[in-house]
Image (cartoon, helix red, strand yellow):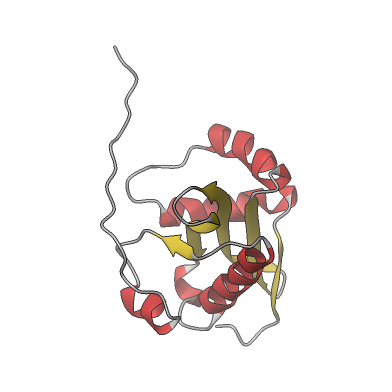
Amino acid sequence: MTSGDLQLRKAEKSDADEIFALAREFAVTFRPERAPFDAALPQLLENEDAFLIVATVDGTVRGYLLGFTHITLFANGRVAWVEEAMIESGYRRHGIGRRLLEEFETWARSRQAGYVALATRRAAEFYGALGYEISATYYRKMLRPKA
């Protein structure tokens, strides 16, 4: 599948259609809608605390990673958080996810982040092979507009 030319680069507005398609494949709890996606993408591209990169194979986006760094009180400074990491289903297990995470880790280090974290129910073996360990339980509460 990845016998073609694999490249990583910063995401661009022109990648919107391909990233949106991957986000829709990724989503389980939420169903991404195009209008909010189109509003968010330019903001993410301009946010210095956000890191949005794509992996292309022969010029077509086959994966992306969105992560952030932010200041904390408990960790003596910045930490990094992977919010979304998605590889097109037919291109998994070919090193794309590893390359995306390594690139994010390099960026996080350059911003003096003390660690990288993420929440997922998927791909435990993949993350373990990259040195990630289970650290906490993930809780969430859905916020619905009050009637």
